[in-house]
Image 1: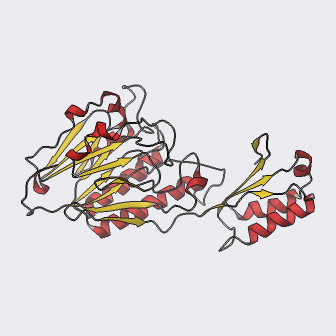
Image 2 (image 1 turned 60 degrees about the vertical axis):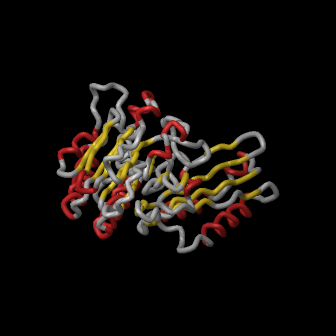
Length: 340
């Protein structure tokens, strides 16, 4: 962290991560034939970009997993390119992007889908090796540690450069196993990042907003795209705005997300099939705003397989037609089974 006392420079950044463009789930498609969850993620990203344009930050940081796969479809690549270009055209701030595990190829000759974004003016991409980007007008250095470079991490090279008022570390990694994330990340002890050296450490990979310390944070994902979306059902999704002079962090929650509803476990051991049908319907009807278009999980404890078969599945089908997806789990003392 720079020891320079001159406060002539100021820096307001926006930090987002884990966009997961190209994420797909379920079999529903929209009117254009696009997987509905893929479209949901696109909508969330468009809202985030529009909000960033309105905020007019001095610097935008994207901490990895822009894409859900190493080989996103042409339509996903084009959509991402258009949105990033719109952001770059309408706000003159530099945009720095670091590679995450989802878009990092296992073979170096495959190449990263992020590389195309560096063709946009004022967009800087670090996808395979540790890299510094210097912005003299902001008196700022951004040190990038993409996922692909973490196995070579040596904290002796993680030092601030006192020629610049602000030193920022941007990376995609896992600091704690206690936070909602997904597979494939690399765990790094925080002391390896030399946290005292930096004015701000912007991280990705953890899918929920986490303030690790005064100068370190995960912004979380912009949609519910982890392997366990139920753990995120009640969590806001969005991005961070950080003033590096005051240290104030503001979380901007996105408002247009599809709702995920996780109904508490229901013990149905003493109920017959008709009573279970009625109980399920009672909980579906109690969902605030109705079930239409939502992603819902219901868990039935202590229900024998033969009882489940006797449920009114035509009745359930009518609910399924209204929701985007209904997941039913059977739970017993011996097993947990996903039946649909």
